[in-house]
Length: 117
Length: 114
Image (tube, rainbow over all chains, first blue to last red):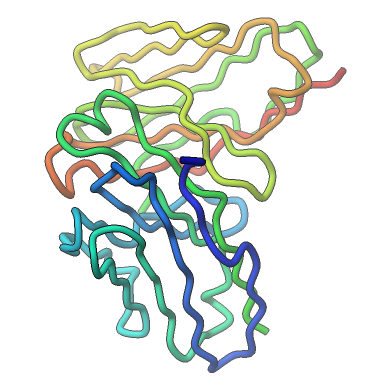
């Protein structure tokens, strides 16, 4: 297992198009998080899954955003009708269950950089 | 919204010197973590300190936590050029479910000159 994998690494899209990102967490991790990071800022929480259940969504996640984790393994984040303000790095992180995050922290992927032109 | 503020926003030091970075946060926490991010990359977990701990060491890293002042500091000793990166502090509530999500500060840019 080589860690958390995110694809694609970079995505350039025209305003109004839909985009989908994929995250493959560490296989034994049942918790998965999506964050968004804009230039010069820290990551901001978007949403959280425990297994296949989406347990929390940030107010940052507008109706144009949807995330899934259908089988409790990989996750996808889709943005519909992209806007220039969606340009950011989208980061995925995973952790083990129970006290895992408390003991070991989180493992982040390298992120998907989205540019909306 | 950001939980805390790191200080300074940018730090430039000579290789071999120590780097001290500070973080303040606003709400009660269960633990505080420090992460490193190289340019354009993901975050790497460095060290975690629990709310009932005051100091922790890991290799060249030393982190302190003062819950009465809602502040933490990260010390990197004998810095190397490879330590050049952005450093973020992040806090979380307990580890049950969604409370385990992290809230990050804006980060500190550390430059270590060879």
